[in-house]
Length: 202
Image (cartoon, rainbow, N blue to C red; front, side, top):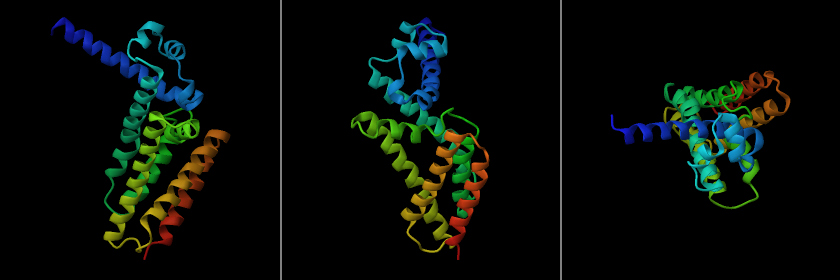
């Protein structure tokens, strides 16, 4: 292996390490609260070692959002898509969301729920990236509702409305757990999701 390939590989691993920590830290200090110094301390790297990977704070924030998006796909979307199409897959998506919060994949709960509050009032690329992810997730839920309807497992209710209501239940569970730390909220959320989906079952 050539020396430049070793350097590139090490650089990629360091960047991934920094971004993993940045995504976790952002759910605690806010995405605007990310700093080179804080990440250096959290990762054990030098400030210059962290700074070398990002040309600006905005670049760091955008890269952190993308890393969190990849983690969300791994922890929530992939497990859900392993379930059979229809109601099972819709419920699996809701369960995977709750599970990733319950397991504290991000210490401050859902990354995108935390980040949305952080950037809601300041327009720009970071806010746009977070809003796009939230729309994508709602789109996934809506698509899963439509699949269940195509299999005649759900009535022909408005898929966007049901997706919105399910996300509202998931977001409420996330917020309550972050604020109160009571794991009982997940059982309540699961029951609420089951009841809401059952209401539209034929």
